[in-house]
Image 1 (tube, rainbow, N blue to C red):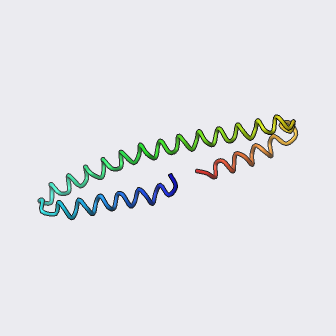
Image 2 (cartoon, rainbow, N blue to C red):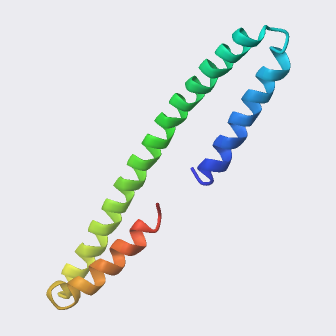
Image 3 (cartoon, helix red, strand yellow):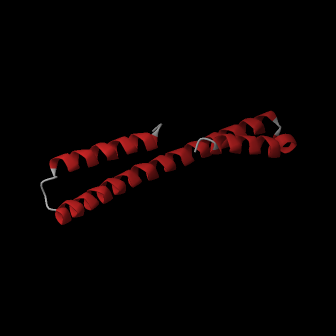
Length: 97
């Protein structure tokens, strides 16, 4: 998901503002307790999204790296330019994170 951080911030802010507007009649301790629980729940759900996104990016990077290395093998250039090309591919792939 592009702009993961911005999308998450927006959702968190909307959720907190909604809770604050709708639950402001509760006493301080109850309000604070539920506010804290709500934030913990949101962050636990977002962690799962973030974790899955990292797994997908790692898989994509690995596949792209393997694909580009196989292209070099077909060209017979693995031994000649392997270090330079593999370093370049690796750096480009890591740049996706």
